[in-house]
Image (cartoon, rainbow, N blue to C red; front, side, top):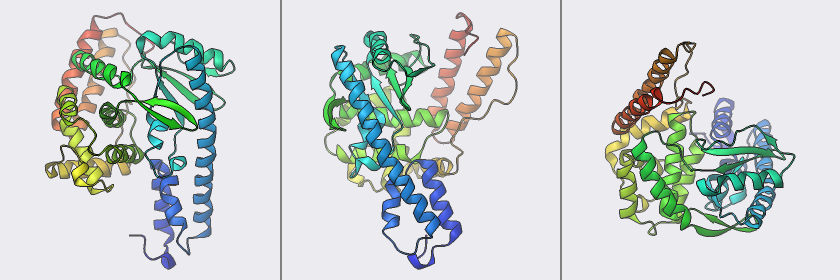
Amino acid sequence: MWGTPATWPVEQTDTLLRLNLQQGTGALVFPAVLAQEDIPLYARAQMKGVCMNTIQQHVHLGHMLRVAWSAMEKADIQVVLMKGAGLAVFYPEPQMRQWGDIDLYVGAQQYHPACAAMRATFPDALKFDEELDHYKHYNLIADGISIEIHRVTVSLSHPLDERRYARFEQYGMSHGERKVISGVEVTIPEPTFNALLIMLHSWEHMTTKGASVRQLCDFTLLMHHYAGQLDAPRLKQYLRALHLMDVWRLFMWIAVNQLGLPKDEALFYTDSVEDRAQRLLTDLLTGKMVAPEDTKPAPKGRLARKWHTMQVRMANARRMAMYSPSYGRHMAASIWLSGLGRLFAKDRHWE
């Protein structure tokens, strides 16, 4: 696609740079590109800069992780490292996997003590989130690094989904796996639950503000790392309970056909989702995997405002149904149920 090294066209070189920077995969891809000859000098300089910045950020994040983890241990808080930092370890060169924040799961019982411990550890940190019990996490920024203290790992709107997922989460986080990351021994989620979490986290981004190919790379490498070790019956139970089996198969198709995961490592793989999986990946690469913008001003009346919000969310459910019709229907049902619940709840003007 890119031609021979001697004929790197400017337009395709710029596309290579732009896509990898947008998708957060630059430091993963650029070292292989830099090994070739006759890359335009401007592109070579930019690629080297991305790789160097990624390595420097990795060192800085590793230091902040060690400080935060030590503080949690001193406060006798049981913590699990989520997402980025805990996924970099699955890459051949972990320092080339970009991660911009530190996600620490502590659960509802330890949530407030953990937030207090982080504020005490980083007294000069920027603090802009409220420590509210209905929030997914509390956030502060210490020395330029965002640290998220998670009460829950994922927010789900359907009450049945929420209750079921809470059971899965409790098991997955209490049976975590020990790994050495950035020189500190940490706990990461139990592998089978982690597979669900990483897929669901990416899907959650797709339903809201947009995801990235890097998240699909994380998912693919996790599946490869734990090939033959995941509890397939338990994973199937998770996926069916949360109406996610079809979504999982979209991810599996992309992992196998676009990211190189061996088919025998792809649990519940099927070719039947090919068209929808290709559409999902194309829209992801072209920046279309984002929720539609609400361009109309919200009505002032309480009922009118809630009806307006529901209409926006239903439009988003129809968008997601293009990729997974079954999940789109479930999403629509969740929106109606959540909307009815909020109709009779205390009004929260700040949300």
